[in-house]
Image (tube, rainbow, N blue to C red; front, side):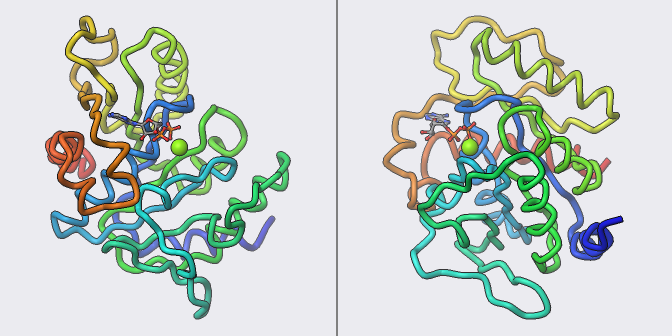
Length: 242
Ligand SMILES: Nc1ncnc2c1ncn2[C@@H]1O[C@H](COP(=O)(O)OP(=O)(O)O)[C@@H](O)[C@H]1O
Ligand SMILES: [Mg+2]
């Protein structure tokens, strides 16, 4: 038994709700949705944390515009810096611009270590940007985060539906709650909505202005994407309480 596992439970205690943003697929907008959700929830006055678990391609710090030199402080663990009102934790504090070439067991180890050292404050929500794929890290994260609720992201493409439906099947098998299924990057010309559970279906528009707003949260919050994301947040907050 790894003693760090017991520590992780203690570390997660001050958190009311953990929301994992996942797709089983890359490039659909997980990181953008996860960071955006953290920003709009913080703007609404909730206490929010953001944890980037995409060790191979961490990117939430780019969207947040994390300044160089900002580092966690050590104090009976590692205290995540507050960035734009969000307690923010990512492997980039330690890897910087270098890749993190981790293999299977090292990846699990890094995940356990990160969760064991991070000392979150009292949080209403911890938003987790999940790794792509349904491999070890995803399964480990589900186990270590004690079955978080999921927000599933897809794009309006049959290729994305194919993979995302596998994630949804896996979550259902594990009895893990799904708070919503977001079809991101929708364009007006996109055809009818997918066959996913209509009760959970949400849409976010393709937003031309998003790229220029990356790294500038104030500007990000003024985009059409963020405007719609606030509405999505308002539908998933009550779901996250049940
Ligand atoms: N709704 C959107 N409109 C326009 N661009 C978007 C939208 N959502 C995401 N993007 C862009 O698509 C790219 C992939 O998004 P990202 O969040 O990194 O995906 P993932 O984390 O799933 O790999 C990024 O360049 C991001 O800025
Ligand atoms: Mg990503």
